[in-house]
Length: 293
Image (cartoon, rainbow, N blue to C red; front, side, top):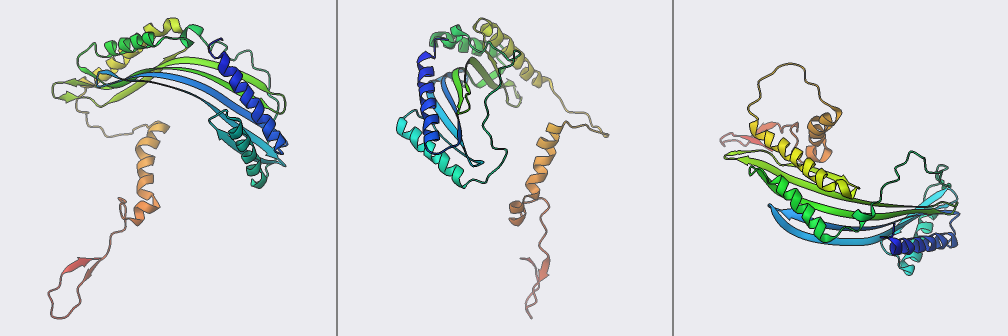
């Protein structure tokens, strides 16, 4: 695990400093959660290479307890002055937070034997930009193998991360993770027939299996999209329909909630808004007309 050796030292030093600052500021117990992440993405748009981008950074957060009261503050730097400021802020927040007997910080338990151990592949973690570009081209070539498929957006992203938990009860644990993600969004077009857009994403943590997995997953996705070209009018049906809980939320509940929303009703945009009663003009000697206020 040599790829993040320098970043691990920086993260552990900053986390240890933040924990000490929180305790010095008056916390009875404190816990720091810190992460470092680096990401490189090659994006595609309209069936061609669009943009390559890279970013990296640290994030640290501290949770403190003071008389059963809890406070939390975070930052995205390892600067000593910023760490001191968020340690003081977390203790200050705890000072006026409501007490809760369930707010605790305890030592961590041993990691179960069943927990996955292979979340780091050194070859994948040190992946070159050239190889990432080749895999992006492999993904695009497979997607556009059938000219009826239109690749609207897509990309291949590498992600290396380091996570750390450190608390005043003796916990000190770190975990490294690296993975590669690929995404494709597009539709199928055949003459005047066009399908709706569809989207998929997949990932792998094992360098050796990635090219074949990209090839297989993209081929399956594009096949499903192209099948949409064979759809026709649905047959009429009267009878019971069974919806999954997710379908009920997406199709029925969300639409109902919108029309019952108080603001929507007040602005008379609801489907069930109360109609304004009609009234007649009562001015003498003038033609009467139906008006609505």
